[in-house]
Length: 329
Image (cartoon, rainbow, N blue to C red; front, side):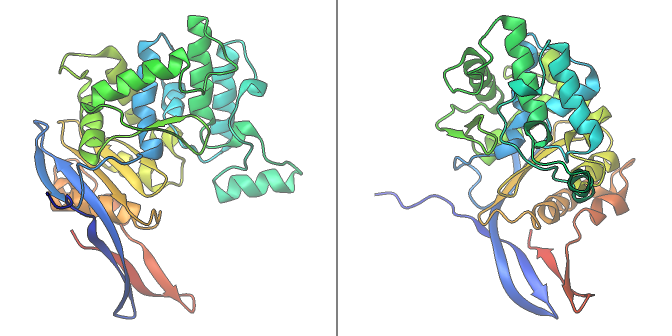
């Protein structure tokens, strides 16, 4: 009998007043520009659910299926947005271009993710709504893709719907791995499994504007260009993901729930990570450390200080900084 494969390892320490009070376990992979594994820690070939990291690949599949959007709205189709006014209005614009309104959305009602945006809604007497939910851009784009193709818009989020079948096929092609599990994401849409290597591979191909056979692909190129041009639409104006993409020319990236994160550079290098406990606080710390281990943060044109700031997670005691989440890569 063969033993178990590689397991997640300690990837970060929780350090308070100089004392290591806990650890985060996880896995990280870095691909070289040619797509080979440059380095890795943990279980990078084990299937995971990448959560919202899948969205740029799903958006590429929608473009292949005939979706046409202005660049900033295509970026919003890739988003787990903060619910800032331009995000909400952008989702409405996508729907409007398809002749629909927000009543067609089947995202669960929610408040904006952004604290300030949420407070504005509450103070105005507003409540939860589907269009404020962070996945509304993706869902609006899914509905618009259905309209283009004459597909049913009431079941667009069902796994057997023609839209979801097309997206699953595109996802498998870009990751280079079969989709073993189709789960239900937090927004209710299908969620496809892959490994961290597969996820990094898909982002590498997007960044290079290529399909799964290394051929030029207009849909992949269009999604990558949209993310590069409008990183605040993919996350939010105050989010660490947008700050990282602004700091590295040509980079694309997407974070997801359960502490998933994928980033690819213009030359084809790519990084993907996940922690077992799903803690969001450690996600940017690990990505900054992975980029630093590969020397990305000090390359020409990169804002070194900005990249490193995204990896700072302070611990407070009595309102003062007394520790940090420290990567172990």
